[in-house]
Length: 549
Ligand code: NOJ
Image: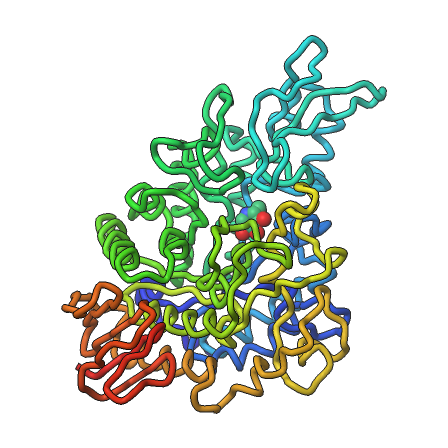
């Protein structure tokens, strides 16, 4: 097939669409999304106007953490299809001019991976055990964990093993679930294996990797005790309060090695870091010229819909990333956080990853959430750099709050005995057709998480070509972003006349975002894009507009 891909540092300006394979499209009707389902729906993503797709894991996995527990890094789980299906999906994407980024999960494997099983079977001190983080316990009989670290998903970060003769053995570290043992990245053998894994997927034609927990792979020497000063279980950590398992200097040499591997391939393959690191000037270390290409801008995602903090984080992002010659990225939703059509209208604190459910405080008013989400997206897509879209946000999907308890699958839910709802609410299979079983997710009514019965108006076919729909707004914003070269532009702040309004110019577009709760006067001009209905010379509350300069 001829490729229509252009090689011009595409990643600096790309709009990258996150596909969560379990919930995108199900070709075989078993209720679980799959690679052929993705392949067949790609034309609809090309029509949206994106540049690339990033797929969350589809590798062989017992699915204890929805595939972020990998048992074979170089094969496809039968739930999602086969390697041939992957090739077929990738070549379809390339024919359509879309690049394909896959997820790499290097901090931990599944406990069912043969490497971990070999480590369990081997003796303490063996080369097999050295690939992971095994330690003797403290206390008289090793009955206490080696340190006080807690798992991001709740509970302790250590599990004790049982020796072949039934006696209690060493402990192993897992920053996430007990089925996700952490690798020892000081071990050369581990590094070599991951070099081969990168080459395996690069040889298959992938255009890059989103690197899971890219701030966690190296732990501080001696594994010192640590107590979280603020939100327990957060994946972040700021400079002064940095945990001994996040953002250690040693991670950077790993990425330099990987960058060399990618540089050996044609076609500008990229690395994108999932690194929850504060402040942005520290996060920028992940995207120095010889390391990764992009890092997800989580400080932006975590900023409320409030003008002045938004302005501050936009300035700080552009400044921190340009200091290292990297593009800024922008993101509002992903598979780990409450969807922004709900999050931006929450009235109670909700740390990322904790999720919301029927008993949460401060639940959002859906109409307000959607209005803010559309305004926030219109602001985000006007900014220079690369933007990430999470499947379903272009439909305006809210978080699903009332999932039945027995449907929930997130390990967070189990590890905290239901105290934290976790992330299932943003992972519900997405609606394509208003009048089909499972809203067109698949050919049957099956859906691994139940879909709300009132999702017909969100279905893609209810919104396609409909003026004022969220889908139409996304398509128009993406087309205008391209036509006006906003992704490669620079922004200049303008006098907005009110503290609650942001006003900026990028290229020949003026952007006004009203985060306040009352309408403001709208300057005269040709309207290119509006996130919601406009009044007569008025920009209503929670609305963003683009005007021709
Ligand atoms: C971050 C991923 O995005 C999340 O879904 C996963 O649970 C953890 N890393 C552990 O792999």
